[in-house]
Length: 308
Ligand SMILES: [Mn+2]
Image (cartoon, rainbow, N blue to C red):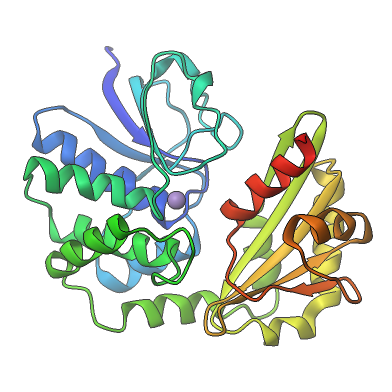
């Protein structure tokens, strides 16, 4: 049996941006004469499942290994950590991502497109736009929803004019309801019982800079205040994660979309790191910022601080 030509995929347990990019970029390639297939490793984030369930679009196929493919394209992904499915770095021929901190150089054969826009979805939408390739309604919806999610409905500092331009272009082609953003963020904010822990664990990310291992949890909610009633529970979950990943530092940042701020929860050691990095004061292990900060903004600040 000969191997299939081309797989488009992202990190294991991909978020909405990853799912949107793999589905749409596979469509783009197929429409431009390159046979390609989108595939997911692990379980897509709830937000991606929410879009699939509520807007009648299909999730890409689930895979357990990449062995059946000759070549691989990574979208919304550019690190070896976080990949699954036995992906040999030399099989990766192209990378689309928007992370400042990345390991793209570890993929020797990849054509790398890393641009610091709010969503990787913007980079894929620009492919359709620039080459005048007819985008399907479902791909337009996936990409539009991913831009809203990644830019926190255009409020996050990572938002660029390119994200706004592509979102406007996609919206017209997506058939999305006007209240899409509100519905997405409401669904995400509903974290009863064990869902809170699942949300933190599923979206957790850790980094290794030099010999230092830093873990960052992130929750995006409409209003962060309600979750503070569950601070003790949150600290238990973080304690477990710190041990599980042998981390030196760990914090959770709760993004409050309505009030445009973050609440940081950290242990004592991490507070001493974050105070100068973010220029905030902790009180009883909790600090508040005066603007929205995403993990992908905080991670490079910590890295720079540790390396200087
Ligand atoms: Mn992304």
